[in-house]
Length: 403
Image 1 (cartoon, rainbow, N blue to C red):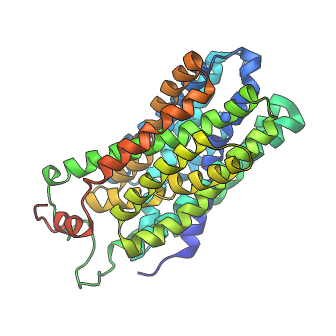
Image 2: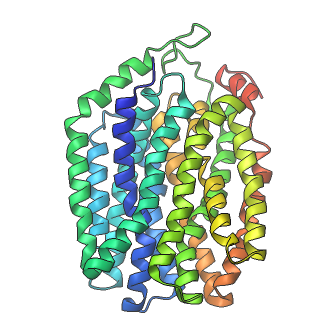
Image 3: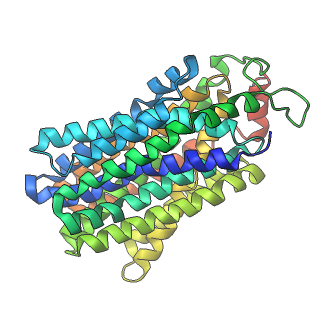
């Protein structure tokens, strides 16, 4: 099967619109913090609720995706993500803010496992490249979120968040009317033949058993958690640092955050093809090693170097998003929804734990201390990534061999 660009473009665009809500939340919180007199710990808690609901619960939707026909979750998830974020700006109090973040997060959680499963079917043999096309939509959405939220809030005040209802409703309708085209890729994807002449379907791939994959799956989840602590830590506390510590404008903070995320989107586009060529493990370990260097430099440099380092860090940390999803799917080819839920959901969602921890650090030691503590995370991630199976061992696992 060849790569289906039309379906991948549709799913990627839906991914972008769905994830705009996640990218918008940190900037909305920067506006809401003085309104509700939130502490940095409370800001981190909102991010934790958002990420628990949008990500940690994703394996549940993944199991639903594997066992039942649930493609309707794609348009529904997109719609709920927009509805929830739309009501954050008009929240009556902190409790309703948490509820709005929860609803938006559930919509994000519903979209990802089913969307990434069909993105794999539409990718043909170019799995990492196809997944990078799907993932980059989310990256661009996350990156556009701060700009869109800043524009809406700047023009219309906190009620401007209601604009997200229009955007997500239109995209949800577009996904709904194209469900037949999306589901058609499943039959074609399951029937394709590999270069070795073996049909690559859930019925013909050897059921290698959970004991032979549990260790590398756990390792991969832990690596993604460390990456997520860096990713969401920067997305959450860069705006706080520049607005409330350096006293820059919200617009400048939003722009810097978007630089980080747009650079990450470029990293996603390049990371997938590089992984197809060089190997999944190699890209993951290289990214972690680079993050250690970049975060060290971020602590010790200033001035014009900061935007450059922010862009390079975004490129490095987000470049492995599609790579880790494909790695998980390669380890669990009979449970694509669950694999996607673990990699896009649970592991990334645990980043909310990191933001809560970093929020505690900021409250007790100041915002600059956040970036000093953060360097520990990629060091741990690099050490764990060294024990992931390489391409040869990954093939042995899929064939039922020991590694």
